Length: 107
Length: 121
Image (cartoon, rainbow over all chains, first blue to last red; front, side, top):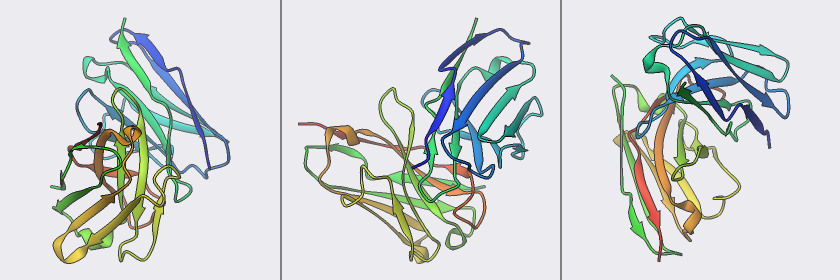
């Protein structure tokens, strides 16, 4: 099975800051990686697919990139609505796996 | 607008059974792979199972294989998850999910609101 290691588990930042979350795959996944945002009590929301493609309706301050088996989600200028938990997910195999999550908190 | 509405959750004693349902609307259900994803209390997301458009392929996470069965009825735009031999660790919110494209190799574009399954004696 493909394991996804996400870091950090918690991130404290202020409105206006830029932040980066990283996910590392245990095997090559051909950029079949997605990023989701989840708020308490709500279903996740797709932000990025195929490592760097912005889902329709998602603000352009969100971006994704890939280098080998390492993937990053960058939020360029944090807005109050961005404080949430973020998950990466690989879908290179029929058995999808998620990262452990990164909780983005207000500093 | 895509809508996925789950039902069937509740409290069940181990090693009981439960059947979850999900009714889809707003898209051509029969053209998409579908998945179930769960989230334990205070925990992260865990993919549970997925099923091909015609039901001919099904895949499961190791921890539920042999106990859970995913199925669909395209005539009713419905997805199901039959859960048996339930354990405490199956306690979670279960989400019905549809993929972004027609392949299994795609991100999850739409999620239901979730249905809570509690396994406890």
